[in-house]
Amino acid sequence: MIYSQFQQSPFQTRFSGTRGWMAFAIGLVVITLTLIALPFVLLIGAISFVLLSLFGRIFMKRQLARFRQQQSQATQQSQFNESSESQDQAVFEETRFGSSRHQAKPHQGRTFEHDPS
Image (cartoon, rainbow, N blue to C red; front, top):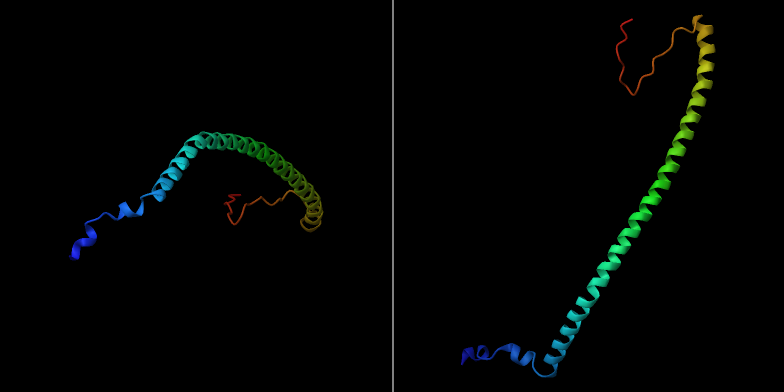
């Protein structure tokens, strides 16, 4: 008969005997270990998340303090350089124009505002 292969279920021969019992036992062990280990995995994950958060906060606070210190040092250095350059420019402007009352207005980028005077 052509359909004789479909009269028997292929799972009866595939998972029968010792192989079937071994597959069942391995599945049962995996499920049991997963259910037992899952709370510990979640607990370890939560603890590590909290520790990393605290460490990251402390680390970022230190980095921000270093950054602000470097920024203040750079600002002081640039102010010192600008003051020495402005003294040099003042001498140059006084000798060229005769007075130091004309001062350039600070501009940012390429945006220039209209000076009505």
